[in-house]
Image (tube, rainbow, N blue to C red; front, side):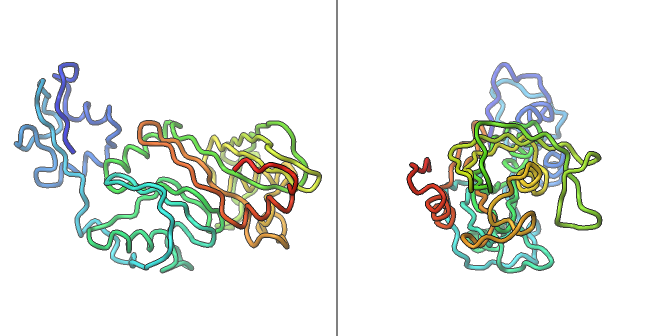
Amino acid sequence: MKYEIKKEDSNKTIKDFLRERGISAGLLKRLKKIENGITVNSEHQNVTYRLKENDILKLIITDFDDDTNEYLEPVDLPIKIIYEDENITVVNKPSGMPTHQSMNNHGNTLANALKFRYLNKPYVFRASNRLDKDTSGLVITANNRYYASLISDKIKKGNVYKEYIAIVSGKIEGMGIIDAPIDRIGESIIKRVVRMDGERAITEYESLLSTDEASLLLVKPKTGRTHQIRVHMAYIGHPIIGDNLYCEKSDFISRQALHCYKMNLGEIGSFCAPLPGDMLELLRRYFKNEEIPF
């Protein structure tokens, strides 16, 4: 990565210049350990160096073999790529595929699939967001340290916008906000519940179609708690159809009807993932005579 220093940035230290551009303290620490990880006009410099107009600042942000997870196996799994370049890969993750490896999931994850896709180079799986195994939709991964740092900084500052599509039980009309804290249930590592001593969680929703049986919602989480949308919809008495963790199984869909539909990361890009077939079929069942907006 290369920067040509402009007049307005002259006399700034390298550290300040890079921090202003979303480079994390962790990445700066890593760059300092790499031989010629930070150079100015082709000469190694430390982060206290004060930049001058027309200086050429270069960073080494590529991965090396020793950065990779030796236990992450490449597996040829079908995935749909929405967008990719040298900095990010955007995937429309199918339901039934975990995002990360875990104790019970090896060789069947999005991490395995992308490791296979980038088999010809050192690859580190860096997902900016995590979807539950049976939630479909957008997952954005960073292909280098800089973009991982940049996206992480945006998330911390609340500058990443997300929209989900959910099909829930019962009739909901209009718009609403759920502001209810979430925490674990007892010692469970999976299940969550609204509890007053939990972490604050905020979810906005808008009803797009509704009948007495079901409603189609556009959901905008403002915080990122585990199972947040699933827990909040169950809490207000409108659980997501098919969510057998927070309500009951459905005869019409084999998983929770929840899809990460849109993500906007500002100058990095805005992305949209079309609804999968099982959710479209569910919509047609409940809204036969309505025009489906997706």
